[in-house]
Length: 159
Image (tube, rainbow, N blue to C red):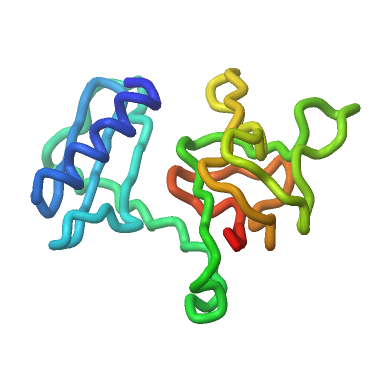
């Protein structure tokens, strides 16, 4: 199962109104839990199963601890800013290559369609373009850091 299929499954479950879905295939085990409003909560797990034979039913399943959510800035303080979020899981890069300048800096004005960063996912480098115009107020992720789907990357002041 590839990354795109997992993302589509998460979206499908979020829109279906189901509280929890567990999917087990030969080498992958996925659990997706949603709230009543249909939003996916922070308890989406993907676990690679061992290449050994199937686990006997008498053995209890492994407990997987959820990844702690990153602390977010107070919502009141950032209420008039637009948050640009990661559309995919991968590694966040602020510049196109090590010898090139950063795509954006704090205080830089951006336009719709401007490249803000690159996210590497499965050896593919995906340029992330702005969907809004404004000024970069804050960069929320360090260069060369792993990012999750829908993780906030930038705060933009649209005024």
